[in-house]
Length: 268
Length: 277
Image 1: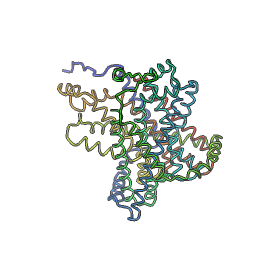
Image 2 (image 1 turned 90 degrees about the vertical axis):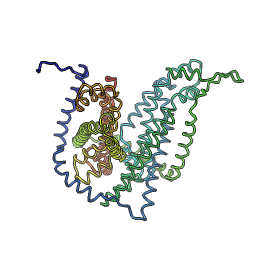
Image 3 (image 1 turned 60 degrees about the vertical axis):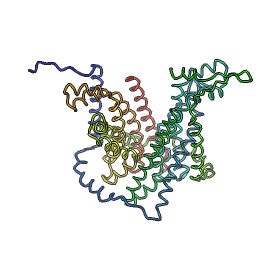
Image 4 (image 1 turned 90 degrees about the horizontal axis):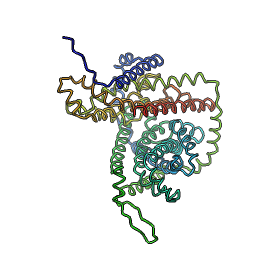
């Protein structure tokens, strides 16, 4: 009966990749579990207290005091304004810098690596770390949150813009350069028309990211809805905190929806 | 290529008075100028609403230079402490990634409409995780800190919420991209659902799963590095405490190490992506 042979559905090379991936995952899992002493069983055993805590302290979501409601909404506006303004200004700056970050486009090709390296350095340090560095020199406030968001989204967009330009437009740029177009002409006639869709898509993506990031930067002192949430959690008012979390979720989902439909419109 | 050619055909060549050739394409997206204008107006309104004291900020710029100068003088005295925190951070990032990977595959299966055909399940799963994804990670960690107390557990659990939600969405997308014919062919041979999933769906979306995982590792590490700042442990705590205590040398070294590791992960991910593609 058991004479039949099973046919492997997967290709052999793929199977090896599969196995390798799973082995790496298991090894990493064991190592990190031992190092952090993380035991999911304990977590599940504590689950009852956890659920009780959530049900008793978070539900039902409560409204803040009536005098504070307007404050909460204006803090949401601050968060939105922070994200939009910092992303736009970062995008404008990143556009000009990205022009010098691509060897094919820049007038100083040797300089391109330096520009990209600088952007990599800025990008790989999280926004919140920037916020902390700036808080310790500029003091706490919305302005500092603005600059921290500006730095990280600027660095991200330099990389994204450079990649967009490398993907799309070097034929165009070369042919324009061959007929003697100057650098601003090349930018305006070749790069902008072919890359603007990509640029704007990245810009929208960055707004999505920055809405979340500005909430977080707010939590450590940048103002906005993050700070409001943090103060309610610190004050053990978890039911109010929960409704603010819901508010944040609504805000983020709404922005994601809007940027999603804008992106469709742009790429049409 | 084809698109380019079409554009060339569609664009009219009109010779203007100066003998110059006008090369504007007729097929312009009218939406883009409107969008840019709207973004500019919104930005101006936002800046006005934020009412930032620019002059005060500008007057403190020399301090920024000062702080960076101090940060650049690394202090190696507490290197062992920093390294320990850094390894803890990496462990939390990797561990939460692995847990979420498993949960993401399970929930991604539940959330994709071509695998679970019961109506409503996919919608329910998707909308629940949309909510989880909409709330930023540090908020989840903060809540977990409140629920579970200090320690890596809170970090892992908090990161898991967001990462699982992210994986659920992206995996469900990859699973749904699998052609219905493949699934039907296997189902018609009498293969049961689980076997179809393990033998057809997972291998087909495997390269995408790796790509998403790599991308998420990057994010998870930087998220994890900042978690310390809202009160969980790890390297973020070292950075924020040393900055607050004006011990810039130690903080600078920690920040630099965070940068090195983030950069290393990014490079690794780029190489893996190239090899798969």
